[in-house]
Image 1 (cartoon, rainbow, N blue to C red):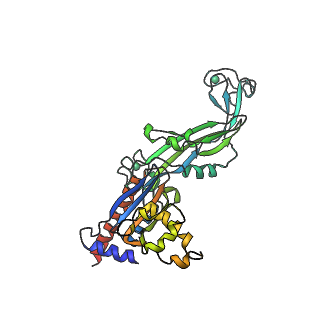
Image 2: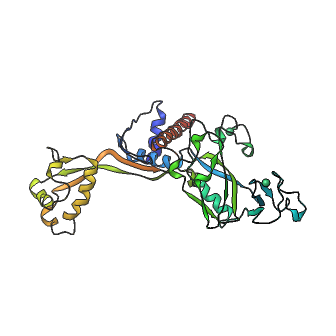
Length: 347
Ligand SMILES: [Zn+2]
Ligand SMILES: [Zn+2]
């Protein structure tokens, strides 16, 4: 309710009223921790929900499995359609090198497109593989400059679809087909990144093969979790440690834990985020249910800083945390913007 009211207030004016300050506290390849200032809970939550459900992301949507059984020519490696090329079936040998296919295991081996996992399950797994998402190059199918005028069934072009292929053969002792076995039909920069190439898809044994074409499209987390690029999206109020009673605080310092009097500034405040988190844990030694609590009382307290939040999330690897944040902010602005248009029409 709060969010709606606020969005309405913002949309009425033509300028954005609230400017939230964002400071990066920690940043890795897949994780980020931010400090939001001049912010309220409703805004932080709107950002959180937008990151999860409205950030454009590429994920595999359709998979075409090639079905059938084949005779693999052991001379040239050509896959001949089942039995047709065999001598015994009246065939004239390998379609490519014309070598006679007489003895299984000597001239050819038989491969069938069946594995231990059903195709449906393989498709499910493919959907969850992080597909590198380039927002400059790709669009939603419904807003794609080439496809938006078409009916949904006809949509799909190099500006809104990414196609990956995979052809894998099993071995005697079994081999794991992984995300790295998928080949992108296009620019090499959009191959599955090194870091995620060992995500398993299925396992194949001798005589089993897997061949498919997988198409990734841009989508939103609100449609399906596979289009949500983030996880562990959370925020908490920023907290500071307050030294209320120097004498009694000594009870904590005497326990020789990590935080001591020197960590507090001359006004008796501890601002450093990491240290505050440590302090919060250490206060359990003098907190409720302990003998020390009787004397310690409220000698040190932890307090929320109004209007400031620690916001953190991880991405699944399809984009950097920075990109996810930028795209989510853009989506959020768009939602507020369209709300403004609606309100203008009504008021
Ligand atoms: Zn051959
Ligand atoms: Zn298109």
